[in-house]
Image (tube, rainbow, N blue to C red; front, side, top):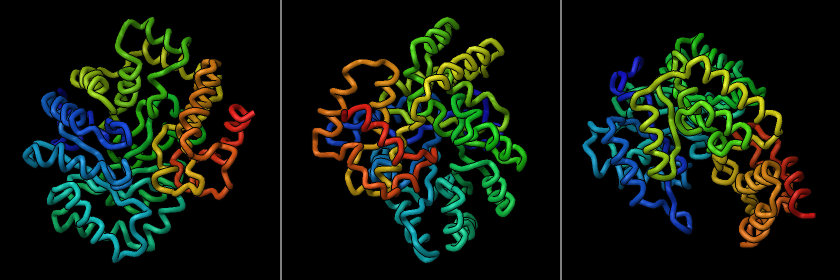
Length: 378
C-alpha cells in the first residue's frame, strides 16, 4: 500500500463511504454485514470512514458507533463527518449539532469535518451563519483535525469559495469518467480549480452510484476485452489516476463490493494509455444513450420531504433500465414495487421543486418525472 501523499495519517488512497450501507428488509442497516465489511477494510490496512447525518436518515452515524468506534481503538480509524444545510438555521445551532454528531458516532473528535454539499445557494447560508468560522474554532479546540468542504456546483463557484476561504484544507468532489466532461457535474473543471488552489481532492461517486458497474452491453464488452478487473475497478482506478487525488471513496453495500475494491486499491495502479482509450469509448456509448444521470444519492427524498412520497431515484433507475434493455420487467417493477405500495407515481408530482433544490446533479427532476410517467403510465 502506497503512503498517502497529502495526509500521512490516512492509510492508502481508499475510503469507506457510509451513504449506501447494506440494508435489511424495511430499510434497517444490516449490522452483521456492515461489521464484516468494516473488519475486511481495516484488516487490509485502510482506515478512512466517511459519514453525514443525512445518510440513511441519521442511521449511518449510529451504525458507525456500533460497528466501528465501539469495536476498534480510536487510533485504528479516521472518521469524517459533515455540517449539512437542513440541520442548522443560525450560527448558535452549529456547535450543539456538532457535539451531538460526536455523541452519535461515539467519538471525541472528527479527523475531517466538511461543509457539506456546497453550492451557490447554500453557501450564502453558510456565510451568514459563519459556519466556516465556527468550524475553524472547533479545529483550534482540537475537536476537528482537518477542515474542508464537499462540493456540488459549477467550477466557478468552487473557485469563489476557495478564494474566500483559503483555510480549507481538502475538497471532496464528484469525479468519475462519465462526468469528466459533462456540463452539469464538470468533474474535470472542478478538479482543475482544486489543483489551482493546491487543495488535495477526495473523490465521491467514482462509480456514479453503481451506474458504471452495470454498463450497456457494448460498453461492458469493451472493458471485458481488456482482460483486467471488474467494471468498478476501472472506475476506481480512473478516479485515483490524477495527481491531486488523496482519497477515493466508495459507498459499498455488501462484502463482495468491499473485497473487489480492496483488491483494486491495495496495490493501486493508474490506468495506462490503452485503458484510458477504452474508457473514452465507454463514455461515448453512455453519452449516446441519453439516460438520466441520477446517482441514487437519495438527497431528493431524505433531505427534502416529497409531499407525495415519490421514490424518485428508483423511478429514474426503472426508466434507465427500460431505455437500456427494453424489457417488460421494468414496467412490472414500476407498477408492483415502486408505486403499488402506496408511494406516489411519477404523474402525481405536484411540481413543488423541493427535490431540485437539494439535487447534487442539478437535475430537472420535475420534467424528468413527466418522462417517467409517459413511459410507465400510458
